[in-house]
Length: 81
Image (cartoon, rainbow, N blue to C red; front, side, top):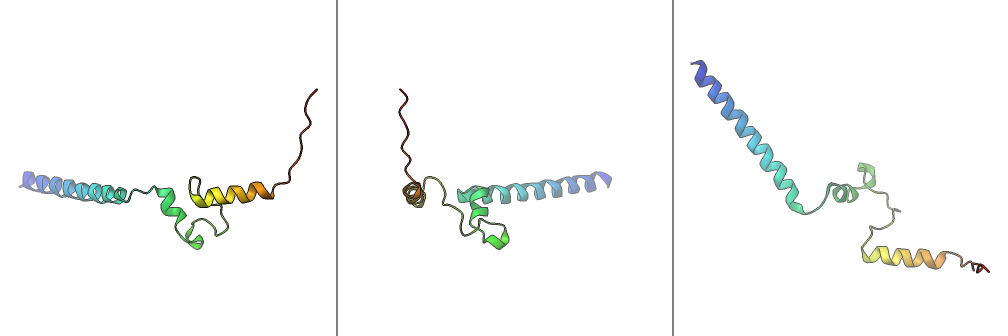
């Protein structure tokens, strides 16, 4: 009797772990990292604020950097003699 209970408990634990592994693996199928998920959340849930700069590598980032560079005052550097 005891052997049957032990085998049933082991089967239940294995099934639970298999389901947990499948659920965890399916969450990775989105192709996005955890940071990207957090960044898409609203600010009140812990996401990025509205005035945060865009992510590097996007067209918005290139426009942001060009605008930032244009706003920077041009300072002429003296040539060493």
